[in-house]
Length: 423
Ligand code: AMP
Ligand code: GLY
Image (cartoon, rainbow, N blue to C red):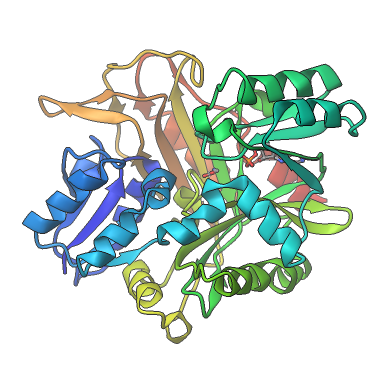
């Protein structure tokens, strides 16, 4: 059984490591993969958004199953194209990936099916959006409709900032066509929880919860990034919250997609905020989160490939999905200056890691057999332990064994979760 994984970041590295635990899997091809993934899979120089290139590769190689991990190829219909060739896939078809690819679609879906989320208005005309902001409650949140590399969300603390956000999206086209439509929504407060789930459209199985750290600097200061670290489980996701989420959010979302003729098969990601009125959806993603995957999959005790095949074949209810009763922490190491401007091409040295620690490489390439940094987020160091405190300590102890020039990482990953646990 040969598997192709589309993507080339830390998330894909974590997926590939987990797939490698299944002895039935022969070759794994990563398109494009990266210098770190090259130790675990054959990296093929085809970009994740080069759908024609991916299709050509599959035609010429013995691929039995595909995992399409990033949002862009999913939104572009990569799974539809592969399915048409008879390749079974883990990941939603284009019509279902819209749950992430269009925020207007996601908001309208939630409104239609009574799924709790922030109140909102959508706009296709800038003048109407600006007029609405004249007496909208402040702070407010302005979101570009389409995919925008996680940067299309602006929390505006003042009316002027909100208007500026609208102009940047609709007039200056800062996010291209993603800003042709926008959502302006109510600002919610409360702790955030990420829940990834496996679903085949008939059954939905939440994975262990996690907490992302999106801001660049300690104390949740600085710019939003692709994620600077994660911990799992998330202490705010209590059994009571989990029960409410299943009843009010997870099952209704799966059923809503079915009712719309957009059955979702793959990993459906719920970005939740636990407000005083209960859990609400901040965003849906049509894929595994990054760097959530780097803490969630190391806790998965069941075989990932067995689950992925069951999702593709719509028999998820028949397989076991079990997580270890442990804790994990992932610290992302970035190149100094990320997410604004940073240098690449530094020598990357990774020492011997402790037995409970994994390094998932995101931005590095091999040059003459040596690893060089090639991205803003370079790698993530994940430790698994019997307590959150120990997982955090072990992750940081191993970060100290990794070296590249201008390495930068947050020093407080997991501290909020730890404080919440102690309450
Ligand atoms: P998103 O890209 O939709 O995940 O948004 C990025 C971040 O913006 C989220 O993780 C939240 O921290 C924040 N955010 C998005 N929507 C809201 C909202 N309605 N109220 C408060 N914060 C929000
Ligand atoms: N970590 C957030 C995301 O993957 O979108």
